[in-house]
Length: 156
Image 1 (spheres, rainbow, N blue to C red):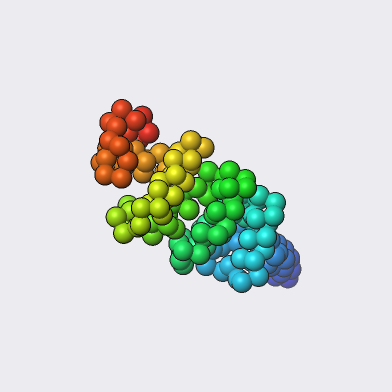
Image 2 (cartoon, rainbow, N blue to C red; image 1 turned 135 degrees about the vertical axis):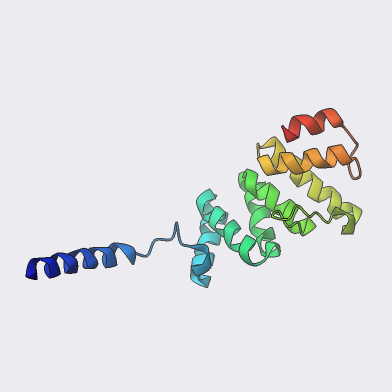
């Protein structure tokens, strides 16, 4: 009995020590603090840390897509990170990627063209979601010239 209690105490202590380590990467999104977010922004924007940017992306997807615009612009323009191009497009169009809703029609022509340019660059960098969205725009032919061949290549 005493051995069981001692063994339980040791296992519990080990779990407590390793379970409470303060690691920046892998932090559950719903527990990101202001300090964590600032850390991720710093790592992403000064070092091009794609893991830190990914954590930021997850955070902003849960709370507000608009907040990702500045970090996304830096990551796209400075580090040419494929996910950042998608995030610029999503932030500019207020796209809800989970619902597939795009609001290009609500944009002025200059902002619409900027959003589509980032979408095209993301597709060129290999982002699958950018390719899929761009393919749909080519199929529709509303804001870019209709091209069924390009559409099929991008969607596939």
